[in-house]
Image 1 (cartoon, rainbow, N blue to C red):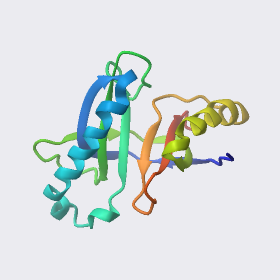
Image 2 (cartoon, one colour):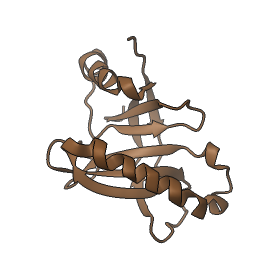
Image 3 (tube, one colour):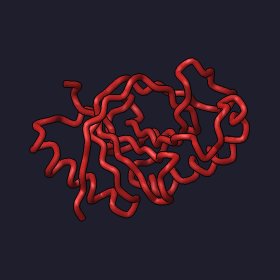
Amino acid sequence: MEFSYQRVKKDDRAIIGVQGIGDVLTSEEWVPTLWFSLEEKLPDILEQLAIPEESIPCWGIMSDAKEWLSPWIDGEGLYLAGIDVPLQMTCPPGWHRSILPAMEYIVIRTTIPLVSEAVRFLFETVVPDEGIEIIGAIQEYYGPDYLPGEISLYAPINMG
């Protein structure tokens, strides 16, 4: 499979959603439950967002349980199944709010079945070719215009 990538700078942004913590080795068991919970809660804030549900960008924010936005290595990891909201929006009760700081990213758009191959491409091709360092956890983005199963991986790099 051929992958392509781009460098993207993102400003600070707020993500609100459902956060969980669990064993990084069994994330395929507990992370999907966070997405189901988010889907159930979305109607509670749609009016406040003033955009249709199908237009909301979604993020899967991964972080080490001990150090915010560090990659999962072993032990416990945090995962926030969330949506991109205006920075000034307050977090409704029962939701978790996190701020992603301004960063530059390498972005690879792929499909869920090819995520492992895309990550391998990132580390084996992009990192050495670009002479960059990945400085945090890779984040998942699900765009409102994406087909089911499409995903973009956002790998934070040193801002240049």
